[in-house]
Image 1 (cartoon, rainbow, N blue to C red):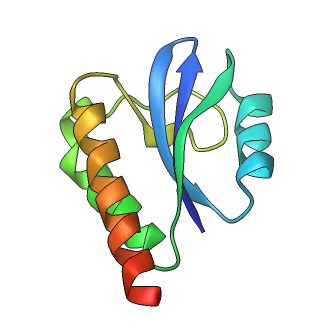
Image 2 (image 1 turned 45 degrees about the vertical axis):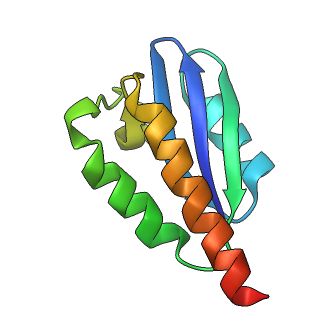
Amino acid sequence: MYLYFITSTRPYRVKIGIGNQLKRRVSQVDKTTKGQQRVLIAFDMPFGARSTETMLHRRYNRYHAPLRFGSGRTEYFKPGLWLLEAVVIAGLISTWQWACVW
């Protein structure tokens, strides 16, 4: 399962989400949301993607900025420096998981 960060152009927001088929999920979100949706970065996680997503949503709750409509509309956040920290955390968790699997 993938843990991904998507940027939206109108309004400028960042979505933290999960999905098994990344391209299909981005396409679903793009079709139902204003502006263009682009994958900023995605991590293939062998396990724990859902719990990692939940942890990130809770950690950055103060930046929560849901959209009015669209698929996954409640998972959007205002961009900021927190995003760098979130990507590093997700990357470390993903790397650790793959190390455990090997």
